[in-house]
Image (cartoon, rainbow over all chains, first blue to last red; front, side, top):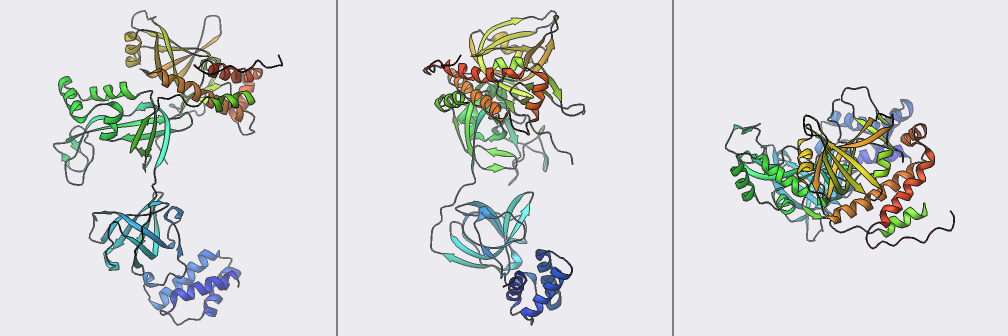
Length: 309
Length: 199
């Protein structure tokens, strides 16, 4: 079967029940674009699909996803692909808009991705911790991050099975070579769902507020090849710098100055080698687990390398 | 599109090679373009991370404090200079009693002496006290990074290796590999290899 014929049949299947059109007719349209007008196959398919959408007035969402493929979340690297997923709902978040019915994270062995389902799609609700086969979802991309959107044509099938959700964590090793501003004892906005760090007592969103104290380190961990920016949250900071939030507050109170906390932390962690594991967020690695590397690494491999060069 | 400049990686280099890195250059005409030292093993360094033993400190300033520290690794000595613009590093050198293991993050700087030779020193961004394990880890890591550079030296695309042949004595390359061996063999419990048969 020719490539054009295959695409024609895929399209035909998508319009089955919506448009009274033959495979031959679709093939003819595709052929004209591809052979006569040198339009790439992707674009030709898109164009022919649009033509029939316009002609029949069928809702794009209602087209059967004849070309949707079963994929793992980790394989998603393109926008607007129709895919089938077998995933577990790992997190449900509070929707920020009435147009969103559900938002959260789904995961499979390859990792996790954000999902969204819209109110207008009128889909059954997903439950946290349950495994589903989601057919005909479409991928979306925003600033290099991929997510999936459920839509009116998505079918949801609850599965009675367990999935081991893989983590998206990265592990880096290196020396802590810098502590950036905004480290140490900080104040965050107390407004609900707002955790912005205050600048001079002001939140960028809510203006002047009575902040709540938090402890963190924004640091650079560098292995001589790459410099990674790492955020240590309160627990991780307490772990590596051996200072608690209460101690930090007392320390700042005694000195009448919060910067003493960052200085104290710097004394503890600067120049120390760490192995940090955690998810990435933008350009940062969020330190979920931190191990100080105090043991000398194996010298044998390096010795052999140096001697054999 | 404007973008925040990416942070320069702190290169790992032994003192012997660092002090041979006498040629510095910029890669753009922009006002704040970073300065690089050309490492003789064929790489550029805007920033380095070193760990060693602080053996001496001295205030060599006339009017205001200007501290010099000697930080020793198995291959040689890094000279650290900290004045009023590096107040924390200067305070550390003032307050620390040598000998002590220290880590230094800093930038290579060169200056010409009266007799016309070029000295390389380190202007610290930070100095902190560390333990012996950190120092040993640095020696092994720096050995690996140095071997990485020597391995990549002959790559056709290595513009910095090409640059070194114009600026430095190319016959010294193998001596940096030997420094790596010296450094590794200086660690406790690491046996020296049998002397090689050839001279």
